[in-house]
Image 1: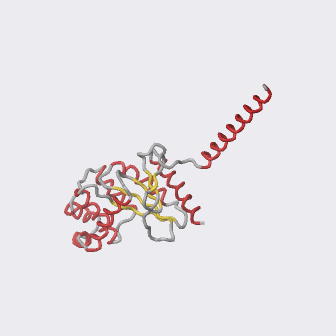
Image 2 (image 1 turned 60 degrees about the vertical axis):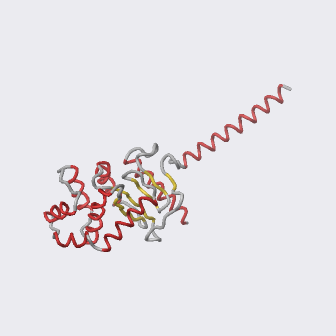
Image 3 (image 1 turned 45 degrees about the vertical axis):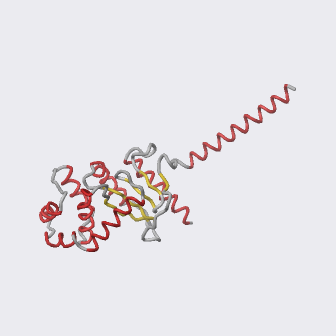
Length: 220
């Protein structure tokens, strides 16, 4: 009787050990967990170009966290593998955000939005304390950077820029963006430092790298 009981207990222990080992192996293969390091959108969003893995940063120029994140993001983006692209989406949580959405898309329309300009804008706002909250303030400051005031204002008020601003605002809703900076991968996943397993800028980028590989593996 005792021998049978010992056999049963040994079997239970063995099964428990095997289950724990399997869980540990799964955890080792999956360093980041859904709901803790990233979230899955209930409705996946279309991305363009469709043949690429599209990573998006949702940001706001006046956000100090976005300013801190930008240099690290720029360095990370320079090392992206072929087939992966980074896009930025300026957010508008309230009407006061809208002029800076126009700033982003107007500069993009003029072909003036490179890494150096992004850094200059963040530096002007957060280091030099130059207010860039209205079109007039932006135009005056950009004139000092060699961008003609009229050209900027024409782009700022153009139909195409207005359309892109409306699309960006809609994307904030579609992607369920509640704070910035937030990263999105392939219209399916989002991550930010607000999540417990992605609680700093470096971790956020590690999670994005993980999600890129996850998407690439699903495409095969």
